Image (cartoon, rainbow, N blue to C red):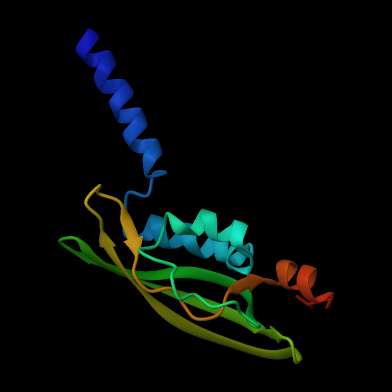
Amino acid sequence: MRMLCIFSVFLTVALSANDGMTSPVDTVEKFCELDFQGARLSADGYKDISGLVVSINGEPGWDTVFVTNSFKVVSEDTEDQQGLVTVEYSFWGEASVAGVIANESVSQYQFELRMDSDGVWRIENIPPYPRVSKSKASDITGYSFSN
């Protein structure tokens, strides 16, 4: 009985340590949701993202964001400790220091992941430019984005 109790505590700690990121898709979906909410726009937001990526070194301060309608995972491929997850983004346009440009488009981005020594999937490549919701883009630009 005591052994079962110890195992339960160990399992709870282990699962909370990787925040339930049990697959490449879980990791990418969490990253995309945080990005959609504007996490890549501030140092505080990067704290949330840092556990999902191998490294955020070299990530510049962005002067342009992609205003995003939606995103969805369209494919996943894993082999051993490597993974590829493709996300399809639907964009409204972009916002930058030069202004707001409506340019609806759909594009895909392929995330490359690897499992670290603790068994946690981490993203090796993050997409250029934050991909934020219309609501977040409106907050930072004051522009009213139409649906």
